Length: 326
Image 1 (cartoon, rainbow, N blue to C red):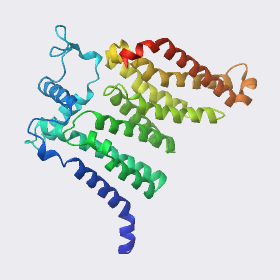
Image 2 (image 1 turned 180 degrees about the vertical axis):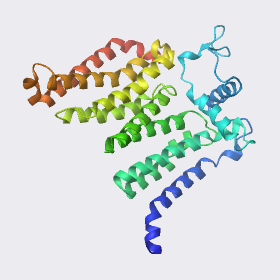
Image 3 (image 1 turned 90 degrees about the vertical axis):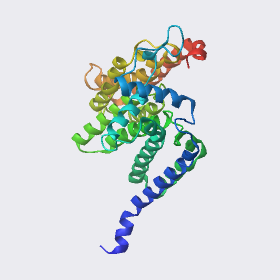
Image 4 (image 1 turned 30 degrees about the horizontal axis):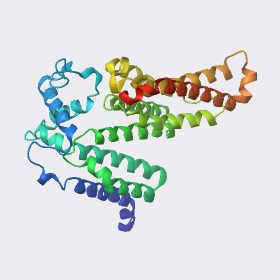
């Protein structure tokens, strides 16, 4: 292999590094203008304060007595994984770099999380769609003003953290669909499910990323004649649905902004699992196999429409509550 061939071989990695370096450089430009101990976003102070509590005590108290006086804010109804992530990232970093403060970790966390998510996304797109497409997406995400503002050093909200988890959840799941080796499929599926769990205890709106995976699975369900990967999908669902339900009271008995969290985040994957399992039984194990098997796609469409009708009914019944709960 001559020098030119080596350069061409490593050119995708070099281009990815350039995109990441440019994204990093853009996002740290405002650091010299941020006073010590200050942030550029409002919620950043809350997460930093919670991270300080976690760093000192190991966990957050049941109620935040600095808010909603005189009874305090029930922290069981909030999703605080980002604060834990900052605190424990600081503990890990200080094992090597002892002079790094918790404030510095919180200050640069948005940049690091965004770069990790962007790098993973670009690599995934490069493998599946080529260098040109992945480069265009990478440059756009690295330079779009709206994204830059919410992933810059000092903003320190959970946006970049949740974006990174969302990208990880989707890309690992799609990779599991592409992988042929059973063991690799299992590992990628578990990785996706665990990432969905982390996202689910970080942000109430993580169902946005979850819906991407569900749309892929719904399309496969509607266009297939038989069930494939049903056990892996069951494993994926079991990785995050019961764990989220047990980990946070917001999923068990949500109040305020978490009132519909169970219905919007945990129910859709369960419903899809249910209709997939039902079709599998009807076309393989029921007494009406010969009736349903030739019409597997029509059966899929009917089950999907029935599920959407039930979902629409729930939305209409709860519509008046969305003003104060979403």
